[in-house]
Length: 322
Image 1 (cartoon, rainbow, N blue to C red):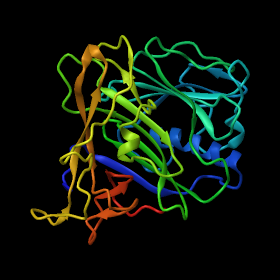
Image 2 (image 1 turned 180 degrees about the vertical axis):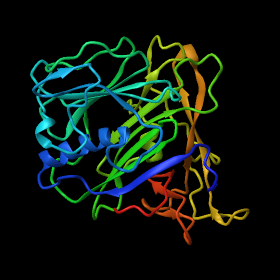
Image 3 (image 1 turned 90 degrees about the vertical axis):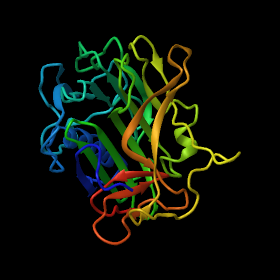
Image 4 (image 1 turned 60 degrees about the vertical axis):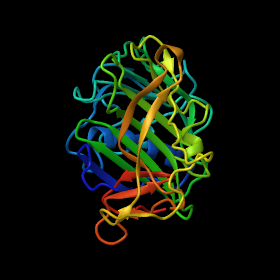
């Protein structure tokens, strides 16, 4: 694993939620943490911060640059209800260096452990206490699960680059794996004609996230817009092959050149006819030997520089709690 990251990362690993005593409060704590980490209210992220364009706390809502969820966790400000009924949402804008792009967290639906997540490159408009803002080019994760529906000892993990690329994870103590991921990253090695160079990945899996099968399935966990932004696309992460087997380094190999575990780059492939080809590479995320377990750090001796999430190396400065 290379020790020189392509981008500069900041970390908030093993953060306990503000309140995990019930699933309702745990869910509120998780949603608040995503916002708090992105804007710098929690986690020590001092560079590359996102900003709040507007919000609703279930009592008042508008796209007026006001953070009604607050700099300190207050569960009463985060209210779930169906769309069209007073509920909480928040719209965030990335750094200009990243795009900018926009993310709206919209806590609608009938389950405490699910939410809508909406990304766009066009700035959203509208928004009230009953309905989130909308954008003309948005791509959406509807009713996305983000925990297992019970209270428990959950640890939250936040990673963000100086330009605002973000990776949010969580792990349940004793589970020995990561079970949720929210990733939004501006791709490297994109084509010159691409206007939309960032894609999102959101997933919850009780069996663990970031498996090769999961990253290459047809469930639409990866989402974005095509190169011109005119159509939604569901890209894939292609597998490397050895002979007839779709495997990647299925042993515990140590790279002889730097005494670290093997790794391989990860690319996004869009199968749509209008742009069928590799559209870019995921910066600082690498395939790792499939025999490694979640939480394995590299190097094995000394200060950690990366950790295993599923079958992917992810930057990290410490060992995760699983």
